[in-house]
Image 1 (cartoon, one colour):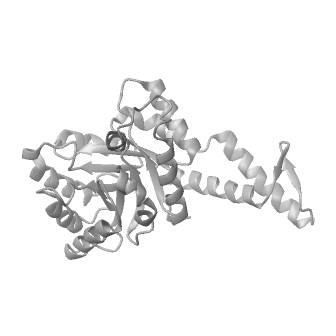
Image 2: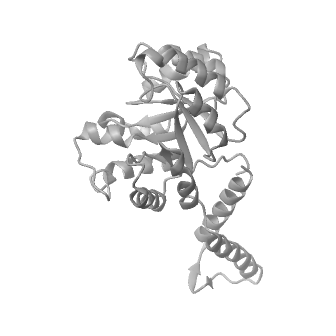
Image 3: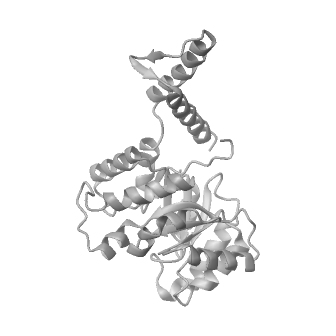
Length: 287
């Protein structure tokens, strides 16, 4: 898991806003999405594209994973966005409203046409009913590495009322999560819109972490610190995981097949979980 990059906090930054791009250099998000789509007005699309490509190809953002969210290919800017991003070679291009694998093939072809290295991956946004129905095929696309849930558009397209517990969206979030896990790709929970509702935001982060999401997309720098904390193993959890591994190895050497730690029955699957948690903690510490 040495090549694993944590994606607990993934912050959208409007690429037309030069001041925001400068500020992002000091924000402790695991990854940044330089946004050319929703956060950019039509008359600012070209300058946003230029500034995003400069930012994504710079070394000014430390170890953060840098991505560019392009406009869709059905817009006047999408094709040029992908070609320009290909030349900048970010970690990934983030593609909105992906409805199926054929669309990802088109994006991949454009990346190749623009000279992008094979390391430039696609982060596919699933946010439409058709995309949800095709989510398994999307997740298994050869160039797809991260699934991003666009919960605002998802709710709009479904005509769903979003409640505090997101009960109306849970079936669709679970479908996407299941497909991501089956395909072995990371999956990011959608944004939380009320930047002043700290308690509601943290509750939704906890819900996403408990469901199994790898992290959450964010719209404000103030959301980064609580997200990083919630999506990280706690010190108590890490201590327990270390003891699980140590006591499991000791039991195996003694020929014992059954053991308990803190009164909990431990099996191979718990050891696997413990090793994964410690690997994640090591990757976070290396940021």
